[in-house]
Image (cartoon, rainbow over all chains, first blue to last red; front, side, top):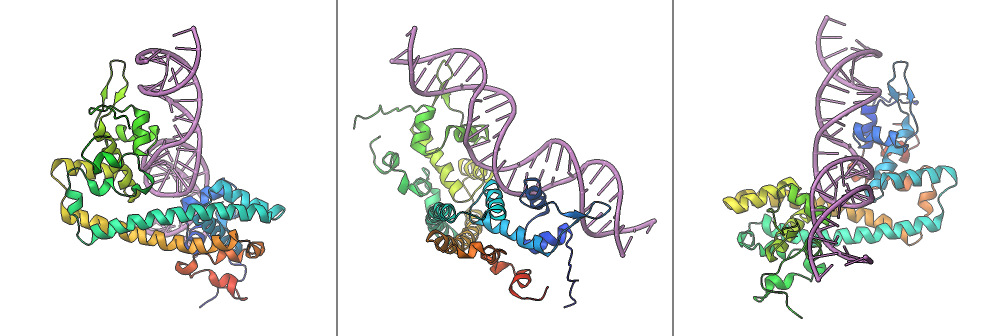
Length: 154
Length: 154
DNA sequence: TTGCTCCTCACGTCACGTGAGGTGGC
DNA sequence: TTGCTCCTCACGTCACGTGAGGTGGC
């Protein structure tokens, strides 16, 4: 392919395409200080280098790991300044791992019900009391099941 | 257990505990019309019956299925009025199923990296270019990998 | 009278989305 | 000159969270 020059310069739209974020997202990360201020042309257009793609992707990936923008800002600045303390980082990863495991477990339960409904087993939804919904994900919710599953009131 | 009267009345706090939502959430659902206006005491306290627990849980479960409040409002009012058209419901379930499958798949990838970091394999994060992050979840992102994985520029 | 619970605004938060109104670049 | 892209406010959205300031109930 016809290579762009070695000092390739990205405009906002091209950078966003390359890194997989929206323009509004890019501006937000800039405002929040997650990205260094880019160079500008005389007329004010932002000019990004190759490294901006890496930085933006790092932000995107950290977001997908479940970190907030505030936390990402902290991680990036720590890394830039003193390097990240390994113990702190490992603890953060353990926290996120637990959270991710919980989210996966809940999604699996949800998935089971959706699959039933998607394949046409909709009868449960026509139940006037909506037992289908009532019993969803109620593993963590024992306080009220009796109100439906037994004839006598709680 | 000492049973509450058959015409059990819930106050907002007790209802929220029973259904697993916050008070702010309850008020929001009320404002958005997802719940019928409750009865009030002379002094303005809301008084909910047993059926409010079911209704609130239905909302919670639909949220966990990935529906927005607007969609939930539509589903609940459809059910109340004409019943929900089975074809429409099945199509909705299929859409949500696809979305849930994607979210699970991404979370599994994320989980793998978090597990490595959580168990102390932090070396990748010390890479100055942060290859660890760069290669995260990049299955759907082929456009920029070359910038890091090969010596020559894109 | 003392706590505890409830009430209603109304503003804050998080991560953006979406125009409006204007200018640059080929 | 015509499009297309870029710019900066600034307000909107989604699903709540969080006080402030006041009243009810046992």
